[in-house]
Image (cartoon, rainbow, N blue to C red; front, side):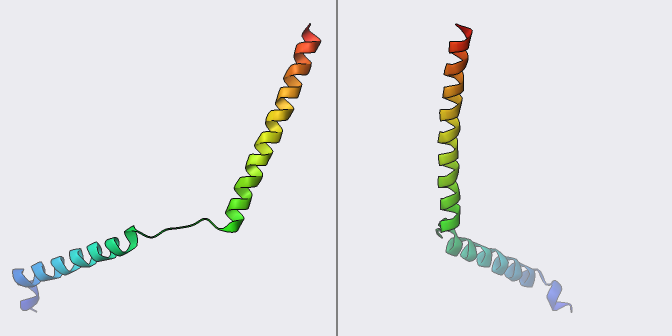
Length: 69
């Protein structure tokens, strides 16, 4: 048990952990995470809904302006 508390053993263990973490980070850093088809469809639907809402808002604003005159 005394050899486990040896500073050189501790240094080797710490270096192993750090080097392992750096290697794992390097391996995962360039991964591409694409969107699924479901997410793309949801975003397209949100865009369509936003356009429809803008059209409705414009119509309401023009009607309110006509009523105000």
